Structure formats: structure tokens, C-alpha cells
Image 1: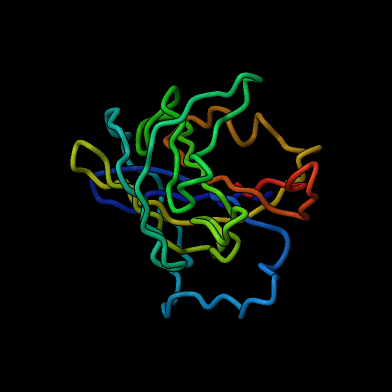
Image 2: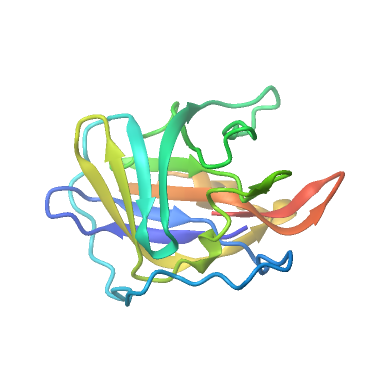
Length: 193
């Protein structure tokens, strides 16, 4: 799994975000992923004032051709963060008991890397680079704009809960998906943040 730190560059909104990054290639005999033709802005702007709470409706990540609806998620029976239904591989999920993107605190958006039927919405999250943009459209008609600052990967046995989910003193966003090696019984060995 990995993490991408992102900061807002909106003149009226402040946000910082983290996105997951897989530690391996897409594989599966597919052609290599090609990013959108643009040069990332390597300057990561400072955060602005937090936004008021508002439900996220859509996430767009132009560099990796993502535009997806967002649904609300909770915790599963074991107290772990849920995921969107496998039957909807192009859907992302927001942990609705936490901050909304742009609000003060660490907001979480999750999506599948793939399913038994093929690639899913966050398959190429690991292709993000410093300076790429993440835009979250909210119900209050504001868009929280984030700039990727860094990308990191964590194995499930060394996943730093406090670093990924903890309070940072400013609005931040984490994009999470699976990564690493896949085992039929155990699933993926890592998480991309």
C-alpha cells in the first residue's frame, strides 16, 4: 500500500490529501498504463482555511483518467473500513463518520484496484506523481482541490494506522486501495494510500 500527500491549491479552499500507491505493476498481460498528457506542478501549495462539512459526490483525478461517483461507507463487523460493493467496481467510497474532503481532519476515499471481473477505479492510483491534482466535488457545490505531494506504499502487516488515519492539524485526504501481491485466500498483501 502507499500514500500520496496532497495539498489544496484552491484560492478559497484548503486541503491536503494522501493517495494510495501500489507497489507492483498492473501486470496481467495488459499494455502499460499511460498517464494523461500533462506536466504535474511540482510546487505543492500551502493549505488554506478548512471548508464546512459537506458530503462528497464525485472525485476526479485527471492525470489517471478517473472520474467517479462517491458513496458513503462505514466500518465492517470487525471494525475495519468498508469498501464499495464489488458489483460496482467504478464507484469510490467515503468514510462518512469522518471528515468530508476539505473539512479539517483526515478524510478517506477508498476504491477497488480490481475485481474478479477486471480492473476497477483505483487500478492506476500508483501512477500518481507529485503535483498531480485530485478534485472532490461536494454537495455544497464547492470543489476541494488537492495537489499530490508524495506517494508511499505499506504492507498490511506494517500499515501505520496513526500516520494514515490520524489527525494532522489541517484538512487532508487519503485515497486508499489494495496493492502488493495477490493471494487467492489472503487477498492483497498491501494497501495503497
